[in-house]
Length: 265
Image (cartoon, rainbow, N blue to C red; front, side, top):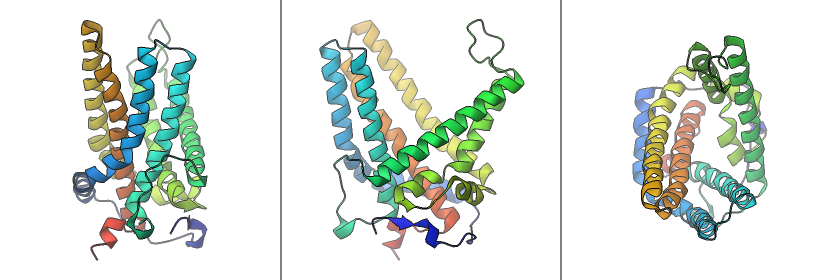
């Protein structure tokens, strides 16, 4: 199956509850068992990102070169995210996996869905900060630590969770709307948020800490390559965890079995 048509599903289909105590071990087991396959998917994007960043750093290029690297990283990140979702849900013909980064209809569809989700989250966060004074309290105008900022972050998290099903659906096929996403995600927002907080947040914080230490090493010893290598790898570690968590929740909620589960039945 290359593309799934979500309009072929009934508007109302049976939805399953989300048990945090069952979803978390499943996420950990999938990452532990399939990390080699995910690493193989990420290998070429990591090499490309590292090669470009390393070459531009050695040549002392900045400005437009930085925007070019960001554009390439975005291209690769979208491709990789779609590839991970499809790895979890769709068996490639003959068991073969596509390892060459390229954008087709599904990557474009995923990109536009992600951009729409980003603007929805940003809009809700900004409105919450404006309504509850989150922008007050700092001379530079940055959000101040207080109730306004906390409420803004929580509002953004709720929006992200409520509409996040559009991402795996966009990677898998057509006909899945933002409205359908929120209809199928409502009722599991609390355990869903909890799963995100105990999986993605610690991983990203740990990666940020290591990156900070490497930046300190770069400033102290002038070694930039370790930081460039780590930045390239860390991006795909974070994307792998996020896509796996969302795949597990999407599968458990909608009853759509992951391909690794189908292969054992």
